Every structure is written in structure tokens, then in C-alpha cells.
Length: 372
Ligand SMILES: *Cc1c(COP(=O)(O)O)cnc(C)c1O
Image 1: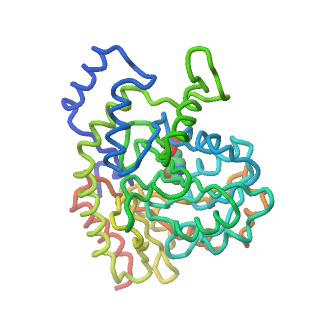
Image 2: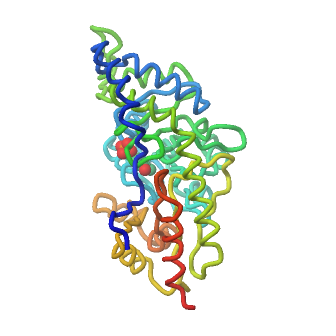
Image 3: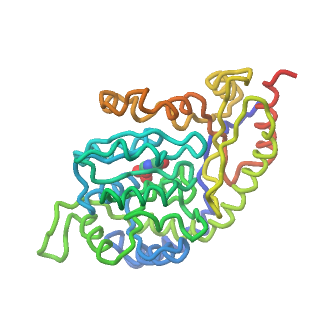
């Protein structure tokens, strides 16, 4: 039994004293937002750390997604996954775009490229895949389809901070990649987000869009939004970045311990992590299969009863929410794998401050439900 509740994630907070010099610097400059020195520095350091050319910082990942769609002037229909956080599809609705859901691959839990082509119509303008749990999508297959049909690709990379594949950052793929720096994510700025883009011209357009469309004092070129990251958020990002390698290493230890401890448990399937050369261990999803003694929801409730709050990411599917339910592509027959996985998935706690003894306890708890 745990006196203190254990949640699925916990933000990584360095010592408060480490943050004070950043605050003093902001107080001294009196620059609170609008692309101040902290913002400029975080942009530069993130480009360097992530190994990308251009990055535009935002006040959150959802506004960044909305802006990414606007930047590429996406309209009509966009092909996406129902197996994600609801903001992925909401960004389409807020832009007056119709989401078209395709099923996921049963191994990677990412959009199944083999399902994309049959979902394309004359109205399709883009594909919006998600690197779910930070596991890279089949980027080559997706790009090949996009090239064939002249579609844009925007990756919802909210889970994929610092993830690398064989050729480098996973954020280099597609036309744009969108990050979230929300408190629950691997790298956080309390609230925050970013768009990674390949060229300076696109970055310029994004910068205009995130600042109401202003180009200069008297020129507005687009119906932009307020997507700017404040100095205090950027400052916290700079501090987080100093600790990110430690945070990732600690997460990696937990991931390894879970993998070892849960291997061979009847009815428990650990989600594959291939495709990445450098993972970020942002989530630890397991699938509860038929031959496990408890159902997923029973195990979820049992964890709750000992004060461990595991999460059913992603359940319900986006396509089950009322504003999506009526779409033809939301039909369960169209997305059977996503439907099945969302009934079986459970994400276990993983965050830098989680003690290995607690991980052992969680593993033992999962094992102990098995018949002897
Ligand atoms: C967190 C998340 C978002 C939204 O990011 P916010 O910064 O919270 O607005 C979008 N998509 C996915 C897949 C997410 O996990």
C-alpha cells in the first residue's frame, strides 16, 4: 500500500534555487514575452540539442498543431489516427478540416501505412500521423504515399522529444513536426510546444502566424493567433534542458526494469520499441491479453485501490467522442485494431523520480495477479 499516490507521470523539477537566476534575469530585462532573450536562447539550444534546422516555440502544443495546419494551408480532409490524445483531431476540427481515421498497426500502434491509400479522396490534402508513445512512425512508407498523391505530412510529435532513428532526429521527417512541452511530457516548459520546420521561409510564416499575423508594426499578413511562448516558460525550458539527459537516463533504467520484470508474464504484452536508435521512454504501455486473469479495467481498478494511478492511454478512442462519432471513418469496422488495443492498453508509471523499488512493486503487483 502506498501512502502517497503514484501517478503515471510526474514533472521533472530541478531545485528551485536553480531557477532563481533565470527569474532575476527576466526581472532585470523586464522583457516578459514576444520573443525575448530566453525565447531566443531556448530556440537555439533546442535546435542544437534536437539536431534540427529550425524550430518555432509556442505557448502549447495544441496551438502549435493549429498553426502548423494553417501554415501549410491545409483544407478539406486529413488522414489521421484515432489512437492518440484528443488534441490531434481537435486541431483539424478547429481548422474546419474533416478528420479521416485510419487503423493502427498492431505492433507499433502507429498509423498503419497500408490503410492510408484507400482513405484518400479528391478532398484529401494531408496526413497527420502521431509518433505514438515516442515510437517512430513508418516515415518512409508514409512519405512515399504523400509523394504519390501530392499530400503534406504533419507529424504530431508530442511524444517524440529527443527520439532518434537511424538517420538522426525523428523530427526531420514530413513537412512539419509538432512538439508539446506540457507538464506531463518528457521535456516541459509548464505549458509549451513547438513546430520543427525544414526551411527558413516556412519558419518565417509560422512566426507571423503565431504573432497575430504581424510582420512589422503596421503590416498584418494573415489572420494569425497568439501562440507565443513567454519568457518564464522559455527560461524553465532552458533549465530543463540542462537536466534532460539525466532525466532520459533515469527513465531508461525504469523502462529496462519493467521490460525485464514483465517478460514472460502470461497475458501481458509489452509494446515493441523497435525503429528508434534513441528512445525517450516517455510512456510504458502494456497490453492486457485474454489469458491474463484480470481484465484491463479490473487491473486498472486494483492499481487504484493501492493508490497507483495507471492510465488507459488511449481510451476511449478519439473517434468515440461525440464530435467524431458520426464520421464514416469512426465506424469500429474501419478501425478494429485501434478499437481492440484501446480496450487492452494500460500505461504504467514512468518518470525520473520514480524509485526502482516502486517499479519492482508495480511489477510484482502485475505478476501476483497471475495464477500460481
Ligand atoms: C500532449 C499532446 C498534445 C497537446 O499538447 P498540449 O501542449 O497539451 O496542448 C497533442 N497531441 C498529443 C499526441 C499529445 O500527447
